[in-house]
Length: 205
Image (cartoon, rainbow, N blue to C red; front, side, top):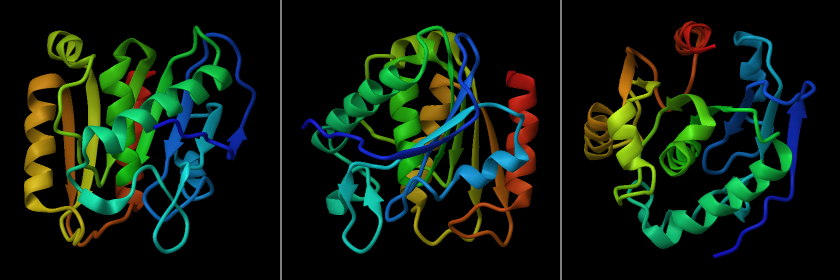
């Protein structure tokens, strides 16, 4: 399925070779949901695209919730390519990406990592889950094991134990994951999360 990303917000001037933060919002949100997190992070240019589909309620979606935490190839492969097409237009060829995805957007962050790992400098998975099929870059990731950070609230009512286990298993075999959990936190992000993300990015930069 060919889907077009028609709206985004951005900050800073992108120059060739400079890393670029890409925010990927969750289901039912939009391009304005995550950019305020840049206040916690190193001073970098950023882009925040709007997902191309209308959600069932308000906001937008990367794919519809027929299988919310276990998407099919049909759900995710087309939108992954559409997102890459948009990134290729927006980001200089020599610039790498710092991916920050929340919930459904964190799945999209892993999709980008798993399809073109050479383009990714850092990956931040917030309240996340993963597509269970094999992707083009998985073998490369198994060999290189990039360092990623995965953060989730211990009181998250939306991400199931099965989805958490599946993501953790994948991370253990394909990455050097920094996994952080937060007592009292639900399906959200707080200052504890962002302090850990900022520490991770300082090392990765």
